[in-house]
Length: 187
Image (cartoon, rainbow, N blue to C red; front, side, top):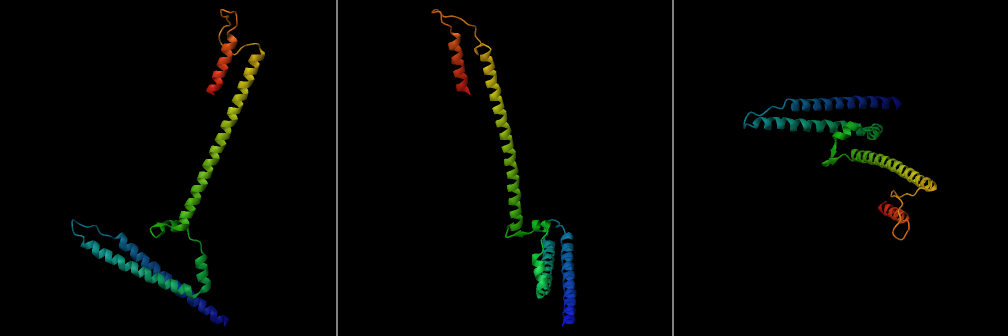
């Protein structure tokens, strides 16, 4: 029975090869029809009717050849299973449309690609904000240290000269406190 199975597999393989050759020949014929599509001269579109009829007939032959290949493949369960599990090249998937929309697998891959690019953008923004936060903290610390050093040195932060009003009080202290309060409100 083993020899019989081997001869059947050989016959199925030869049949499959013949069907595939026929399918490729039909596709080639259809390509020739499309490549040789004539241009219409003026208002005469009858040439397109004839060529379109040829194209439709050629496509029907492709469908019949494809059905014959499928019939041979379905007879062999192992082959059919392998064909169903075989990965489809991305270039072919991009060419295939399903119901006027994108191929579902290509659509899913496109969504995944978009999500990954948005995630990368968010990571870049996070790093930029962290850098900005660090720069702001450093700037505030430097400013605090500068104010502390200035007050320790006995200087006031006001830029006006010291003067006394009519009552003999120093107005620089008031001016300095007012300018600090004003800066705090602006920040």
